[in-house]
Image (cartoon, rainbow over the protein chains, first blue to last red):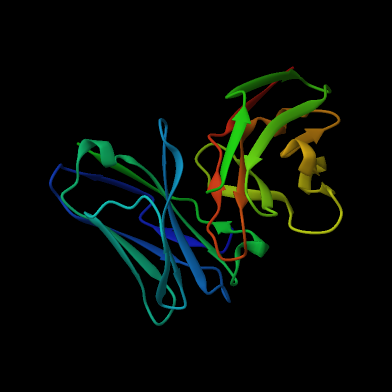
Length: 113
Length: 113
């Protein structure tokens, strides 16, 4: 157990639907990062939050959004889902900066049918 | 912008043989460099990191890597492969404490008995 909790582990949904992925960071970590892992694109950085504020944005589609709550857990919202959104979505956390490296959760596997 | 190239999407070695996984990075400033391992159906686990100081860094499970600035490389090695080393390995780079990690495409390591 890495200390980073992601729910659900698996999600199957239809095109056009909306889903919410949840992440609880390791105790004491203030930064949360979301990554998408697919066979063709590899690990793509989506977005980072630090202590409730958005800190960095990567290749995140406009149909996707995220937030970090006062208790530091984070949610990634994916809407108007397409077949191509099927992927593994990872959450990672770190105390503050990248210097310490990240602790990853076990991921949410999203399948859009 | 920083980037990472991992040479060889698949490497196969015999049990007991040397493991060498190659990583080259592109960065305009001194980088932070990381190696992660991903076992099937699991999240990524930090193997080792280089931030400052000694250029030869040792990690978990007998792995080590050497930062070579002149070659912009951070290759991962292990003297003797074990069956349990079979996994996907990712090299990652960050240019400062505040920029998110950029990952390579990964190298799948197979260990043959």
